[in-house]
Image (cartoon, rainbow, N blue to C red; front, top):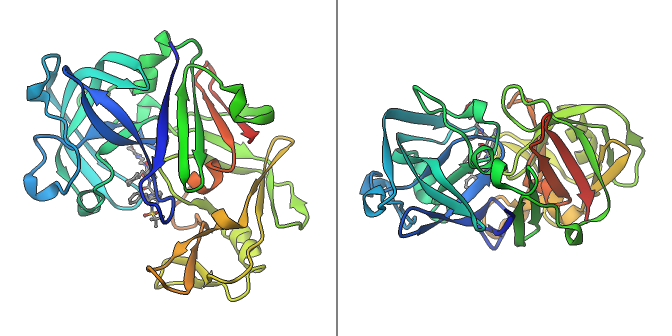
Length: 331
Ligand SMILES: CC(C)(C)S(=O)(=O)N[C@@H](Cc1ccccc1)C(=O)N[C@@H](Cc1c[nH]c[nH+]1)C(=O)N[C@@H](CC1CCCCC1)C(O)(O)C(F)(F)C(=O)NCCN1CCOCC1
């Protein structure tokens, strides 16, 4: 099998996250989920989510599906890097993305979600596409959609073609040559503890010299920005007029009319350029002349994260062969 599904920015003003339509159950219930390579739980707003915590999200009702089965005695609970979280019970049911159907996918139904999920009415849940070792279901961990779908895919891969303020695509089971230019550079992936962890070959600020130094981090479709070591981040913002590391805004900000250099990162011998428009993430509040940077320091996180700001500058292949690798191509 092969399949494709849209990755649509949830906000027309800036790319905070992307959602993809999925179907669950019989007859199919359609939800818009955030495909997230930084986690490995597939969870949804559901008929079990308290009404006070649901604000416009689509919900999955297992009781309305003739193919749903409660996974008795199983629960889940997850906390994300931005402090948000959710927890609940587990069903298995038919689950499809882009026409790829998994009959007994573990679908985690939310009994509770944190306030930032309630207020984000464009996200009905997440599809974790990290490695199944990160799945939080207890007492038995469950497989991700990708692990379940792999045996029926023409190739054990999925690709991300995220775009700047535009609809992109996730493809499953094939590599669409029309979506990239030149060659795909593959590098090894370390699956411990369960992220798509790889090592970049270095970075450059604008037309400055390229610094060939290894940067190990995770490819994370569920994180909006890029988080890198402080030395790299200060080297970047040193080139931005009026940039400061603002405690109140929690990161590097600068006047929105400042000229930003592009940010270059290396994958093996290949170079990828994040254009200035991606590096100016958003005004700190609507209409403010102060903008928040798309590159921030990872010192508070503990790992470097190549989030959407970097991913949308490339065509990325998540290769699930043994051993897994990750491929990057220009587009
Ligand atoms: C707006 C912003 C200031 C740029 S933001 O940072 O708030 N953007 C959020 C995403 C978002 C989208 C929509 C609405 C609101 C927020 C963002 O980038 N969050 C990251 C920030 C971060 C990461 N690390 C430190 N900080 C995050 O938590 N991303 C997780 C998925 C998010 C969660 C909130 C809802 C949208 C999806 C993530 O899964 O990508 C993760 F990798 F960062 C993460 O937390 N993975 C959980 C890993 N655990 C390990 C233990 O086993 C269980 C799984």
